[in-house]
Length: 179
Image (cartoon, rainbow, N blue to C red):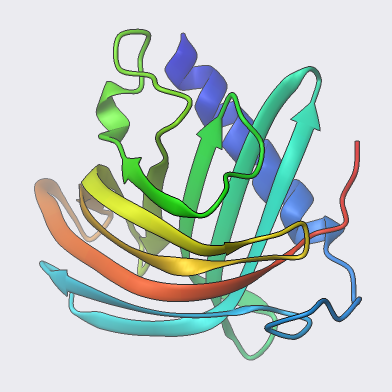
């Protein structure tokens, strides 16, 4: 039950982040934020692009979402890495656990932990373990680095599980979406 609530919350937040970002230039990374990441293992790829975050309360539920995405021709999203946590708003600076996405049921849920996933190249992988470190955490800006192991599947090879390590850095801007 909690797994479905978290997934629904994160997907809803993704829509709001995408449509709710403004053009204000906060202190820091500019109007679109920035990130770089490397994926290694069954997929080998380097990514770079924009970084946004949202923190707040929707329908009585607190949450935080960090969205890193690259674009094709400044229109379509090519690859995206998501980080989310439910139960608390924007975290302060420090290192945080990235939990196993599969264990985010009632027994494994911890509001201090993050979950993460990557989508791109007709592939989706979910976090197995890892950490994210926030070196800056203000209402306008969240910056830091991450490394996590993930597993999932590709629509091109649905019978085999994909395992990867994803690491990178980000300097994200806050959205001005309010509910």
